[in-house]
Length: 265
Length: 357
Image 1 (cartoon, rainbow over the protein chains, first blue to last red):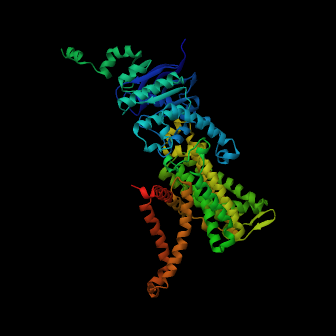
Image 2 (cartoon, one colour):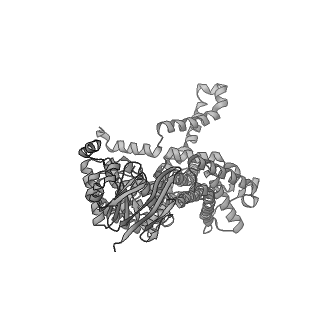
Image 3 (tube, each protein chain N blue to C red):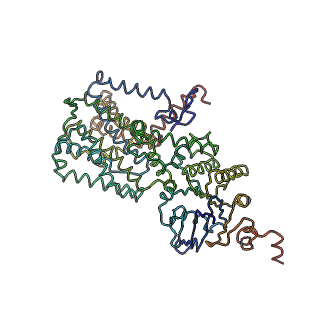
């Protein structure tokens, strides 16, 4: 039996009268890349927000690593190993890149407001340096060493996306949620980003759940794809199956010219 | 936070330890140490007036750093800092007279006591933000002020309370010259404490909460805990500053710790630079020295031709107050990011001096 790291069961979420999600269930295999696609407003980001804890679904349950997390606070989920990046960049704008990534180590560090300030006379310095070493490895992996001391808010869009990914990796997560990691990037940056995602999946063994609009990337790197439309799950399965599905093509991918002509008749 | 470009040519870091220092370069560190050494010798040369000013800078500077940790680094707001400063002053005097605890221990204890009170009043801070929080802390200011007036067992009511001078191994620090060293030590200690706090785990968490609290929470930072803790640490600093003030003057009365004082602390922090530790000290020095300088400038006006115009002679005192207001307004217009920012720009300019273009 294959290990499921994330089990989402019949999640429903509404904002007033707007039903963002209705009865969505899916399971994510450990060590896989799972993509969520769908038209704008389909509830993809709401789904991620439910998993990462920003929203609480009013029905259904979410299990992570056989533990119920449906009503857990976001910071406790970070301890369990759920990391995420945001669609509209959520870096700490006035901090250096290095400090941004060090915040990702927060829950793995122990020094506090009393031992931290004693610095030399407490284990704080040793701990800081130990985590700094690990953070540097992540910086190396994502190739952002040239900006490590820059203020995050001054970086270009593509770099900021990468720093956000670095910060999420610094959490040492088992599951990483990526909200449109390639939005607004050119082809070269997209290729780089796809490579990083594959590497962190294959080398670090992190399970990836991502939302992405670039069909080429989605079909290339994901093991499983789920399609949402108007808050409902249309279908999920292997990328090729989903691609061929009639409903998906109507709702999201669009029909190609010949088919459209045939329909018009 | 220094960028790579601020480092002089040839200064390469070969270990993470060397890259994590408080001071950007060795020169700055040596200059700071030299400055402290010179300050140690100051009482031998300077007269009482300057020492008084320095001691004032020291206790206000400690309290203002606390406010900067809250306002500048954590992004909260407090209009009750003056009251916490006063609470520290009364608490230290009270601990000393009622329990005969030595004054040296009373000062940190007063800090922790103020921290507890600050966290109590900071509890709404974990839930509300911005203007609403400002009003909630304003309430704290008035409640604590009222407490000073009514709790005679604690503050001596309207007659105030006496605070014994600091006594260490039988030596009484009751003159300006001797208390100067206590003030200098406390200032250096509390500023190093602040610097280390900001470069370790909890300090980063504060800034993370300020810059983007939603993603801070996703990164595992407990929002409520850190908002409350920031309030606590800020009150702790206020308490230490207040305790020093009490044992320096020897007498505490409730009149001084009004909303005006709270606003003065805010002004120091804003003028110095929000979110900058050295900026805090600059702001305090500026705010303490400005009235003194204007005093002497206005004093000079007496000797000019205008000195005979009754309107001017009557208004001299007001001219000083107005000038302080004007300087602060001009400051906020032309240097909204504070003295720390200006300092960085001056340094940048000189770094490339002949080749600025």
